[in-house]
Image (cartoon, helix red, strand yellow):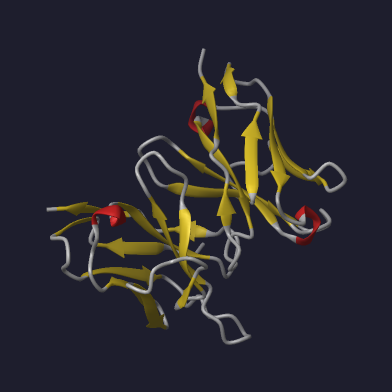
Length: 112
Length: 117
């Protein structure tokens, strides 16, 4: 199984400041078609997870452009250019290259 | 508007069975891979099973293989998860997910399964 490791696990951020979450996979999620099957989700308090970034760097429909995803190999990053109060919740990265799909432990973003 | 509505959860004794349903609407159900993902309240996300568009390709997590069965009825726009030989560690909120690992990923609100005597 591909192990997915996130850091940090807790992320206090001042509104308006940037934030960054790291995601490392034990094997590259690179498909032979050239896409990295690495996604980012946000689970807001009391809600189901919602897709933010798919294939490593593509924003999902309706996701604000302050969110961006990047990375290659086994190292990926989610960046929020300016954190807003509505961004609180737990962020998960997930590899979808092979079953079992595996998620990181989650990073809890809170507002200072 | 896309809707995924899970049902069928509840309290069951260890060794018992339960069937979860996921009613889909607002999109062409038969054109998407569908998944079940579970989450112990307050904990992380764990992938459980997936089926392709017509049910001919199915995969399971090792922890549920041989006990759980995922299947779908495209005529009724419904995804199912038949769970047998339930264990305490199967206690979780079970999400029905469209297109996990795809650009159209969408999650239902979940159905809570509690396995306890």
